[in-house]
Image 1 (cartoon, rainbow, N blue to C red):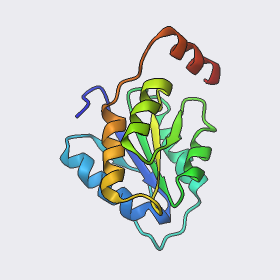
Image 2 (image 1 turned 30 degrees about the vertical axis):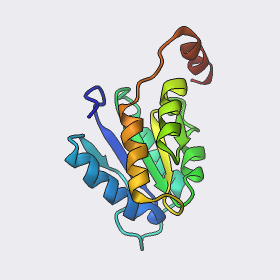
Image 3 (image 1 turned 60 degrees about the horizontal axis):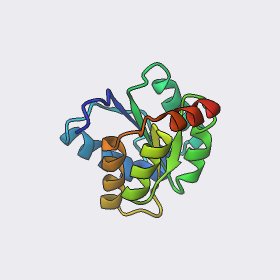
Image 4 (image 1 turned 180 degrees about the vertical axis):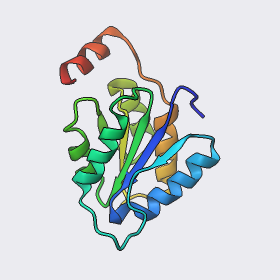
Length: 148
């Protein structure tokens, strides 16, 4: 468990509910402080931009928090989340991608495609995302500043 992560906010639209609930259970068991922001019933339709907004709002004043967004494709959540200046979201489908996106781009939100990823692989991606460091060198800081 990465003790520098203050909270993990987790949200999903109706298509991501099952995966979201699994991730919450696994992260809580690993000792993370998990905050469930999304819908918990797959029969309750919700628009992914609203879910991404709620997560971005929750993370606004906590730069040590991380976020997980789940929808059917992962792409909708990624696009919606990246509209907020303090969010750097990436859709990841492998642990190596999650590691590289943290290391190079300091992502603070991972998005997952519930329709396309196995739950164990999703957890490995999330675990890697939460445990991987950012390569806090000048050129990477400069690049992040340009998009923030």
